[in-house]
Image 1 (cartoon, protein in one colour):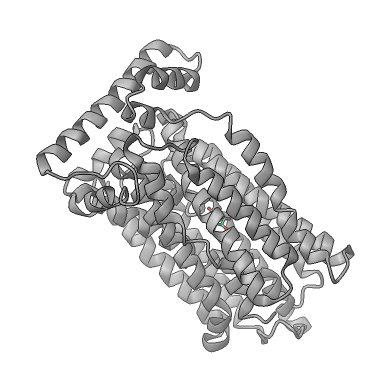
Image 2 (image 1 turned 90 degrees about the vertical axis):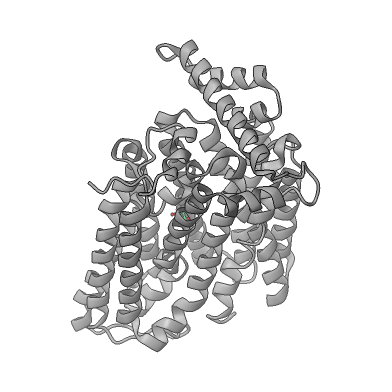
Length: 451
Ligand SMILES: O[C@H]1[C@H](O)[C@@H](O)[C@H](O)[C@@H](O)[C@H]1O
């Protein structure tokens, strides 16, 4: 497999199903997260994909296998944060969505370790099959757990199952002070929003197809026809696009290639440093995102990403490299300081990413009102995987064509543009109920207080 096939296999398929999954969950009371056939399709595709990777002997079969796994992962990456956001109490929503990302980053660390163990000690012929096959274990665990999970209260209210919705809210609220009052208020807010949306739809004359193949048309129309929905979509896609176009996953996919070029003796272990930094700072985000706020945490962290990228660009200007990953070009001793500088600046970049851009975009569902929440989140997730695909495919060619220094500078420019757009358009949504957060985008300043 050459360096061009590798990113193709890495990203193929991940963004394909998100739109579909979006309409599956919007459903207007006809399907649900748990009962939907989506779950079973997801499981089937995941098993089929993993089998393709396990038993495939040619690159095309592997691309197909990886695409199928990608389809399942794409759907899950959008449904899981949406489900968490709809279920979580406002004060903990950011933290709970970040728990999901924490497990993603933990999974990445485990994957690196498994990869390293099989690369060092496994058989050359079959070791890689174990690497991909072991991915089935967490999927099976997830399947077992999903069966016992409740529907979200918002879906239940829309489906006319008010008492069950109250029961779920009660369970989630627990025994906090004034719990009974909180439960009734939450339920009332959801009901008001559902009623207002039905009323708005009636006035505008828009009709939603309930269920069936065309169930995605109504929410899609409404997403583009209503100003606040368009704004929500613009912000969600901006963040998801930025999360990938800032270049982070080129480090995830190619850090061992980069560290080999820099002359580190065990590049897989050095890459592990990247994954572990990501994990540790995602924990920091978990502890602070609801307190600091989504907007502020992005405004504080993206400048450090820019600094990290520019420092690496500077470091790369001292090292002469070849991006051909089949040959190991050991850097001269004079370049060793530059290599350490690059490692250090990459860690600054990764830490800053993990605190902000790594997780805030996944809180996208709080920007959308209920009727378009899953369609909007689906489109934004598709933007994420689309951008991921582009970055995976272009990283090595860019390193060749522009030099590593300019490639990292380019990512810094993307971050700077993103930072200014976040400053201008991203409102603070932390601590607000989903209903309050979505209504922020009504006003002309997009809910942004720039002071
Ligand atoms: O939020 C996650 C996380 O930051 C991962 O580390 C990254 O690989 C994913 O692309 C991103 O969506």
